[in-house]
Structures are given as structure tokens and as C-alpha cells.
Image (cartoon, rainbow, N blue to C red; front, side, top):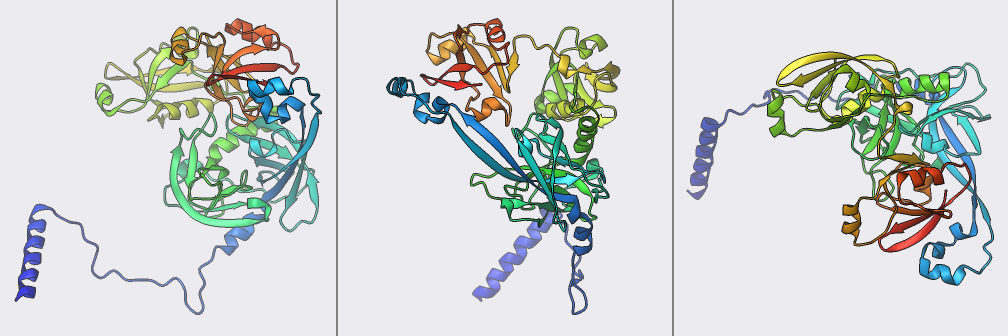
Length: 461
């Protein structure tokens, strides 16, 4: 009787649930198909064979010369520096070797890879699957803001990769990562596309990543991410991992960004980005109600005499598309504008006072951009040190504040971080941006004296 009573209660609860919610059920006659049989093996071998010789192994060698004070960690502490200051420091030289991957994009030897794979290298060697010859490569052009670089080897009739339109990549697509993880040689891993248009990761300045769970490990950098048809959809660039090993979160630079930047690097040796001249931000769901429930990039400030200023854009405008491509966030607008060449005319659609308007804007060169109240040097970006920031620190000091260090730059390599305060360069004390500009005007190596958390240390740039 107890069993019957319990069953009755369950049936009543199901009836109640059906009255309250209309569930969507799968068909009861769903059939299973088995992918394997005695005469059938599920395999992507034919796809992989067509592309494996398009992916190369890259080995680099870099000679690093350290001055004695740089190689001695105690010299960064002002207390210990007193004990070592009279000791002669012997310059040290060491050779740094690194491994990575690359993708052949032309039959005559042009190869795309990550900038961080070849940055600062003295020699670059390339090997191709099935070819016993090792090729010496030359750097054609680099773009640290996207972490892409072009190198070239002297060879002919190479197997150039076939490139797919990355705008058509969908979440759930089956993908393969090809590269040289840990230097063990040609390796292929499988996964799916976990997300597209991923930005705000903090890896490089321009981010529009394809995220995948295909295993990507150190050495895969610069390798290929291909779809199940064997077409290139991205260049593997980075992973998120506390251990340094794969945890299923990898990032690839989409093929459309790759081809745009590669073309400029091959033709001109550098990539010049366009700029609009606006300060932008994302908007909340509450603020979206002021813009007919649209999302986009909200203009919070406009630079004088910038392309946006000349075209008539205003603070408070919400940009929702550029050349017909939908914009839903500030990072999407930044990446979109950065994908164009200077002097390009773009069609900007925006909302103002709940009305849609369209303007044609002639973009300018980011290289010519003059940023008020901000200077860059060797990957550093500095601004004046405000009195409110001094008060927050509780320190009566003068200097300029580091607000950004570019990934893989010399300044980041030397240990300079966001939030550091540059007090002095060589014998010049730094109080203003003009002081900083004068002190860094020469190409010579310089000692930078830096304040961090109550201590002062020096590095050479």
C-alpha cells in the first residue's frame, strides 16, 4: 500500500507540473546511429593530410646581454643595493631558445605566426613535415598589437593553407589545432568552437578571438586552427591556464583579421590602423532603454579635429553598426575600426535621441594620433601623476604613472608594471610628461628609477 500511495503522489505531481508548464519533449522514437562498424571507421585523416604540410615548426635563438645590476636580483632592493654598489658587476650573456609554430600562406614561402614567437630573435629556423631540410627565415613584418608576424623562407611550391571566412564560424563547429606543443613535433588535437568574438581577455590590445577547447599548449603558438573541411579559421595564440598546461580554454586570432594584417605586413612591412577619435564604453541594460533597447558602443568623449569630430558625431551617440556590421560593445567597435586602413571612408550608423542616423566618416591614421595627456615609450604608456593619486598612495613624490605595458614589450620584459611610478631617468628627475619626453628623446640605453609599494628600484631600457 505504501508503494501505491507514493506512486500516486508522483503521478499527481506530474499532472500538476503539466498543468503549470508546457514541456518540450524529444520524439519517443528517436533512433541511434552507430558511427563505426566492421567496414567503417570515422576519421578525418583525409582532411588532416591535406593541411599538415601547411603547418611548420619554428625554432628561434635570441642572445641576451645582461648588465650586472640587471642580473643580480638584490639590486632591485634599495637596502641591498648599498651592499653591492662597490662590487664590480660582470656583464653576462646568455642564449635563449624558444619553439613555436607557423602556417604557410603562400606557395613561395610566406608564413604567418605569432609576434611573441619570433620577437627579438637573432635566428629563426623553420622545418616542414615530411621535409628533412631546415630553412632559415627572415622577418618581413610584425604587429605586436594583434600578436601577428610574417616571416619568409626561400622555397617554392609549398602547400599554402586554404583560408575560411571567420565571420561564418559558429559555436559548436568541430575544429582541429595543429602545431608543435612542447617541441615534441607535429601534433593535432580536436575540439569545438566554444565562443566567437571573445575580447577583454587582456592578452593583446586588439582582441577578437575564437575560443576553443581543442588542446593548445606551449609551442602551439602560431599554429593553425582549422575546421572539419580543412580550412584555416584562426591562428592559435594563447591559453588561459594557472599551470601553464591546457585546461580547455584556448584563443585563436580569426582568419579575417589575419589576412587583413598579413597583407599589409607583406606589402609595407608594418600594419597601420585607422582611428575614429572617440572614447567609448559599453552600456548597461538600464541605459539601453534610452536607445530603443539597442546595445553598441557609447561615445563618452570626442577628440578635437578627429575624424569623428569632423563628421559630426557627438557625446551620447550610440554606435550600432559600421559598414553594415553590427556593433554591440566598445571592444567590437575598437576591433572593427582597427581592421581598416587609414583614409578609408566608413558608414557609421548610430542612435541619437532615439532616432537612427547615418554618417560617412573618413578615418585617419592611428600612427598620427596625438593623445593629450599621455605618452608611450618602449611599450610603456604613462600619464601625469595626479594629486589625488599621490594622496591615495600616501606618498609625497613626483613622477609619471604607468597605466599600461604592452604585451611582450621590452618594458614588460624588464618587469615594469601598471601602477609603477617613474621618478627619474638617468640624471633627470621626472615631474611632467615634458620631462619624460625630453629624457627619452635619445636612442641610448637609460636607467629608469621606479617607485612601487614604498620601494624604489632601477631597470635599464
